[in-house]
Length: 299
Length: 309
Image (cartoon, rainbow over all chains, first blue to last red; front, side):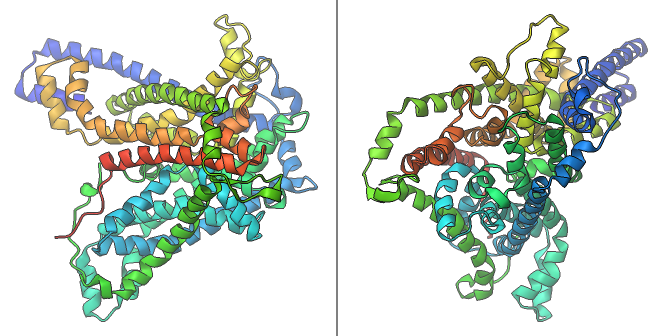
């Protein structure tokens, strides 16, 4: 792009002779093919493990370890039916638990986070800076630090093995995330709109719900998807707080490593079932993922 | 890099905030929730770290033992070796990911294959989004000694079968490679967004002066990358200090304790050795490390919401 502009610039100002320009073009084309090669290589490295997981989950057990690997194989859904129709129903309950936890915590985080973000975007008050720092420093606290005491608290409150415990603990990273992403969005809404609403007799709640929140929907959706992804993927808290019937899907994936005779096909089928929804979501909000991960340090 | 990209508007709304109960009602639930689930457990952990607290021996739990737990942590070789391991991994991972990330970002930024760029940018997101626990499982399969595809691929260049997950050193290498695969794309995305703010006319002006790509990178582009580089490094530092999911499913700290990173060790201390007192002391020490890092990070990179004039 820049190079193309440069050519245009050179052509316009006539700084290069025609032959030099031609040589340059040929050079660029050669470089472009190298670029293409490197991009394809990068794409293969990035996608191969995902591709490998999906194909392994579709292979019959005796094709799984064929060396050289079978690129063409007769696909089977047997591993999927096995994990989903398991009499204990473990993977299915795991996925259900994960959905309940991830959706629940995301909704609570939005309910708590969006009004807070709005107030932070619109009001000045003493201690705002400290409050702000405290919100985002949650990103840096290792979950293991909170997990130990939270386990004892949840045990005393009889919350172990319930989705509630996980929904609550995931708020420690979801609420700050929502606040950050929505704060940015609210700030981009002109305050004149608020003033007009006030003149028209709206109180603060009405101004927020009826006017600002609908305008901030893009930011709200992005933060919701990121909350969902992070909660869905979480293992440490889930492993410590919920065993038995309350297990989430990542915990079940981890459980595949215990016991004898690992069922690779079923393991990969479970992995695919866990990963597929987040990969699709992440692709949808790919432009915002960096911002979500850095809590806004990078646009 | 911060909020300045969106046009700033000065908040001119009510300044008599101390009477504004509506605003307080809107912000209070979030603050109270975070106090309750974020701060309270932390304080609880601090108090635990001064107590004798063993899950499997509840009889004398709650006894105040002063700094005994901290003392035993500081004298614990396993604690220091797991911290050392984590630091070693951190340094390798930061350097390699940063260099590769810059390389990938420059490649995409300078490439004219528009469709390909678009596809690669979306593909970069996939490793990051993949559930780390599943990535670890996938690693178990790919790094398998007899039928893993990594050994198969290496056999073409004449490398004998490597016992990736059975050998202490190679297991660590496997953990590092897996982390590189999953998080180098993050470095690339951060660098790409940093490159997007390099003014094109500056690059073009520099091109008139020199044809040396390195000079242009070093003096024109790199200054714009610096905030992104540092942000990336500090975030990854926090992430590696809390890295748990992927090594847990990939090696479970093994063989022996050769890949037991600090989070894995604390988890084992608390939930498999059941000594919550000592585990809490370890966690608090880790937290202090995290706080120092996060303060550094916030100090250098975050801007508080703009103060209205």
